[in-house]
Image 1: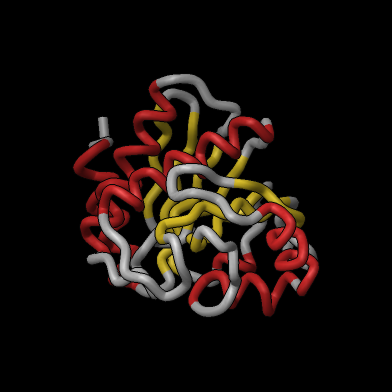
Image 2: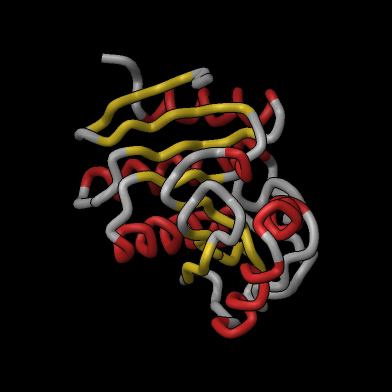
Length: 181
């Protein structure tokens, strides 16, 4: 159940708490590393739930620089695609706001290129990457706003907090960037 929802220029932006691998969306985003090695955090959950075919296809598309993103099959997930958007070059590296901004933008551009209608994002860089959840939420929402202000095929963007703290930061960032009219 959504905790916060905004409609901005015909795009619905929803914040939920939960397991991104259980969501029904055209694509879910994996906060990846440039090698696309799916080990821990969201990547590990996607791999465990979706199956090895996601990693096998990702291996064929690696490496991917920070700021770019690629789509693979979603295996057994409810989604059609996994969009792999690196926030770091190597597995288990720390990341920063600029990398999260670039990764979010890359994932949104990839979703647009796919022509899909809905995409779900985890807290980019907030797990293994160690970025402060407030900073991550703010730059992610800022990039989403920029995309929606331009042109997008997306009509639904879901921000998924793996815990209530991240959910609240997504809500605060959304309120700050897109206050209720």
